[in-house]
Each structure stands twice: as C-alpha cells, then as structure tokens.
Length: 391
Length: 135
Image 1 (spheres, rainbow over the protein chains, first blue to last red):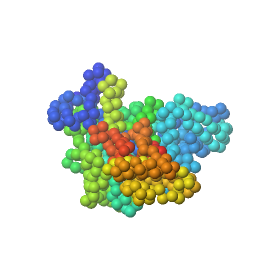
Image 2 (cartoon, chains in turn cyan, yellow; image 1 turned 90 degrees about the vertical axis):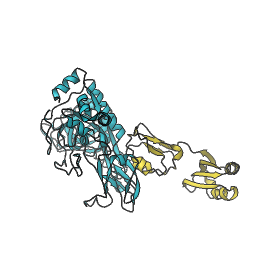
Image 3 (cartoon, chains in turn orange, green; image 1 turned 135 degrees about the vertical axis):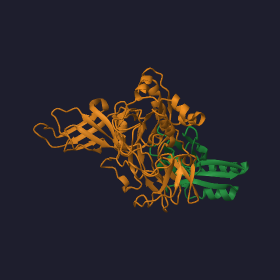
Image 4 (cartoon, rainbow over the protein chains, first blue to last red; image 1 turned 90 degrees about the horizontal axis):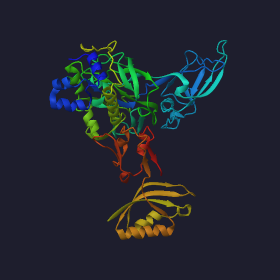
C-alpha cells in the first residue's frame, strides 16, 4: 500500500494525512476500510492514566570534592531514592514515599507527596532538594551533600516505565461489606460502583491489537515529549485469548517505554495521590500507527462497542488471586455512566482520562502534520507479534 | 412550596438550644440536614434544606436571626479546581446526587453545585486534589 519511507516523505513535505483513532471510526463507517486506507497515512492513538510502574533516573553534576552516591542513602524532597549504582546516577520511583509519611497507618492514607510529586515538580521546572549521606573513598572523599536541583542542573534526566500502555485492564468492583481503597480508586461496598482504567477505542494497543505496526524502537509521544518503546513491558503476555476481531480477552500486551524528561510537560505528567493506596504517576502516551496496509485501518476502526473488559471483584478475588470474572462489559457501556452486574445497576467511574487521552492523540496528530514528528520502523517485533510486511 | 439550601452557623451559646426542632415544630417546616458539625464550646454549622410555604420559611429565618444564628445561602461550599482536574471521571461514580457528571461528548467533568450535598465522597475519590471542601 505505502511504505514507512513514503509516509515519512509525506510528513516532510507536509502532505501527510493524519487522523486520530476516534476520527477513523466514523471514516470507516462512512467510506469503508479500503477507501479510508487509501486516504489516511497515519492514525494517532492516545491514553492518559496512572501507571504506578513509572520512575525517573537522573545524573547529577559532581560536587567538589566528589561524592559517591552509589552505596549511600539518597532522598529527593525527603522521598527515598535508589542510588545502588555508580557515583552520580539516582533513580526515583513514583510510588516511593518520605520516611515521615504515615502511609496507611492512618487509614485510608492520603499519600500527599511521593516520588510522583518529585517527578511532576521537575517537569514543571521546579527545583527539588537532594540529600546524600554516604561513605568516603579515596576517589570520592565527600560523605554528605545537600543541594537544590532542577532539570537544568542535571546532566541527564530520563523517564522510564518498565510497564505502561496496558492493552486490557480489569473493571473493578467491590462485593464486600465495606468501602475499599484500591489502585482502581474508591470502591463502595455491595457493588456500589465500577471503575475502569482505559481509553477504549482511543487506546494505543487496542487499535493495533496484534502489534503489527509497533515494536522495539517505535518513537512515541511520552509525557508531552518524544519517547521510545524499548522492550515488552513487564507482565507482557505474548499469546492471550482473543475474540474474532483479534481483541484480547485475557491479560495481554504491555510496553516498556523511555523518554527524555526535558521536553515533557506537567499537562501530561501528573502526580496522583490515590487514597488508601499510594502515590502514582499519570502519564500521557500516544502511538502513531503507520497505515502500511488495509489491515491497519481495519484494526484501528475498533469501536467502544467492540472492546470488552472483565469485571473483577477487588474485595476478595483480586487480593487473594482467585481467578474468574463476574462478567464482561463493553467500553461503550462503561462510558454510558452505568453497567449492570448481577442484576444491579452500578455507576461507573474512570481512572484513565478519555478527554486527556484525546488531547494526546490530537497533539501527536498535529506534530506529525507539522513535520516535527517522524515515524520509525521497529527494530524488532514484540513477543507474540509479527510485524506488517510493508514496514 | 419553596425549597432552600442554607448554611447555618451557631455561636457557642446556642449549641445547647434545639433550634432545628423549633423550626420544625413552631414553623411547620420540613428540615433535611445534609451536613452538620457541632463542637461543644465552639461554633456549630449545619447545612440544611428547608421546605415549606414562603411565609413559613420567612418566619423561620426571622426566628433564626433573632436567636443569633448566621444564615447564609449555600454556594460554592465544595469547589472543583479545573486546573488540577485531569477529567478521569473517578468522582462521578461516588457522587450520590449527580452533582458531578461527565459530559458525554467531551468526556469532561461537569460540576453542578446546586446538586451537591457536601458528602465529600469525591474528595477521597480524586487523586489530583481537584475537589476541596470549604465547610
């Protein structure tokens, strides 16, 4: 149909046709797959939601005399950081807390300030306080260091997600007798509400469910800047059960992604304080899908009616690892404001933001149309996937 | 019939007095207490909805004023900070009165303060500090 090079040439000459994964749905309904595939070069996707598997690493300029953070204890704004490597590399996970935070000792904990808030501050251009206590060596004699640092004071600062962009996620409910506080939000007792964490028909991996056009090395929109898919995400499942449209029915693909923290924006990198659960980081992520054949469009035309998610009890089944779901509901049902489980009508609430995910897809569309974002060919397919021929 | 949502602030000396009971028994008003916080020796606050004829409500409010109760219309007791809100919609699932809803096309949060009964369920449900109580 068209190669990746041809698409990039069109991007450079400003002639590329880009639509979002929401816009493509109506196009296919009106004009069919073939005609849409002839017209459209790139489909952009987007999602925005808390992904606890988020962190940053950064490298500090050395003090005089030099200090070896590796092997010492490091905090950033009081939040425990990891420095178990060389002299000046420090990692902050979004769920790390300060020593003083009571966590859930006062239940439900508020988790007002954790690693995610450190990350958001840095992205917003604010300074954070680095405190190091370590042992001295002949080459790194200094033992204590206390400094205020912003992104511009660091040699490098990188966002890394061992796992992000979940293809399929549970809808969470509570069959128990008391309110529970989970990473899926507040769940009221006796099926009081149902929470979902997906952007549905806009979600990156649901628009290319067999991972035909993306893989290791794919350039993506990450947190407002550029990033890359670097590996299958942790817990990636290569061979999930699928429906007749190829959509996963059981836990499936995830992505490991990376990107320069410089250039990201606090509109797309947001700290979340999830009551009773912990600190997490909401990350905006968008993937462009090159239309190298008609199948790309056929998959990207997926609708909110097509996509279904398992409904899982978080009072017992989830914490105790009991398999089985209470049923399946479609994204369209979830977005209608209520679903039915065991004959009861439950109001629905989101953890991911469709509105912000849409903004990601539109922003990526604009960057491609303006020529500031070129597509990349994956160096390797993800486990279980086979890349499209035209790539 | 008239309905009014009001915030009543009581000085410490009135805390021992059954003012709400008076409203019901002397002025034939239907009183629905939405929220209340009464601290002995300090001030008390009640958010209530009054229902009754315009005349009874006026008489009831005059009585409250006589007693020294400060009566304010309920406006903006709960605030939605749009800047902090990421439109995740988690709050809408726990809001019992549909004061927080999702606009079906834009998928953005709509906050209708007149429906809010200040139960504060949304505060725990919001991970981004977008809901704040002034109560």
